[in-house]
Image 1 (tube, helix red, strand yellow):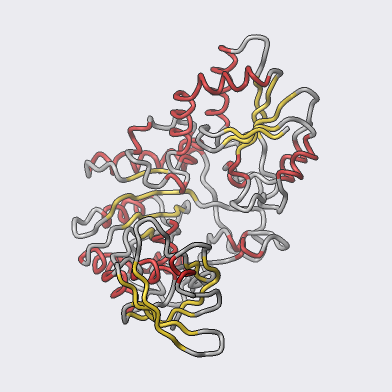
Image 2 (image 1 turned 120 degrees about the horizontal axis):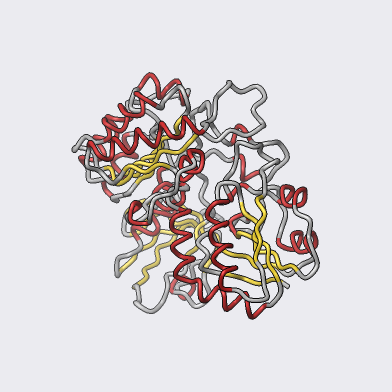
Length: 424
């Protein structure tokens, strides 16, 4: 095994020693290098003895002495993730329409990406060597999709090609000092109610190093032809989940159990104050996002008002159904302080994925194009979360496409209302 080098940073230590793109790193200080994490982990010593192999197959040894102010400068080839071996009844990727970007159909279940990016994994494809490595390199915390501590029920939900005793694995890794953030995708009539209580009760075992437990509602799109029939949560079901989790938080005197924001929206309850979420351990899972966004708005309200006044004219904020109540409150507070200007809002319904999908991150270009009618002299405030890191919406459109569509000044705001970027 080895790692191929994608590029070398100019002026780096690696360039100075003649290491080149397409070289393979065989080992560092006698330890075999398997991937980007090994490179990062084992390249921290002062003296680094590399065994390299060039494209012709010739090997050579190079020694590099690390310097505090200079980067090593080795960029490895893109990592090929470990694929998921499950066939979950609620898998969102299985509910994606055809013809979208290839990356949207990738099913990773890789513990390295869990550690680095917070991706949720199932632990169904771990081997003994993986557990040894996780312990030796202290690859922690890991983000785990559990769904149920009941092995039979978990298999019913996940339909794994390799079912495992997940609680035994969590216990073994906990004894090795590994911590976990747990996700439970809750499906009405399957793993809610008594089964949800049972799962969280099992996770309260003091032998387990559980940092947080996030409970999120199943997400169902309109692209479920050929898939099993599942129900989504309604107001009564969401209220039941919130009541169950409140009882568990109280009975275990535990603050690590968190419902997703969507449950509060569905139950028509106010989201908790920011203190409820402590350090927001599952913010990327949609847990506490509404509360944090509103807190950040309160902190930055003066700066936001100043920015709006400097631009002049009126504004419209586009938002998802889940964010409607929070954005309505923000719009009201802004209008109380603005003179001669007005902010309105428009909720964008998710026609692309279907009415049961209500979160901001899944708003598409086609949703905006089909529902919003641009008006002259009206600036549009958009959430930047509708774009990925490459600048594309889920249906493959860019900011340039949005600008052509709206033909209006655009303000792009991040999901926490802290950064605003203008596009004229």
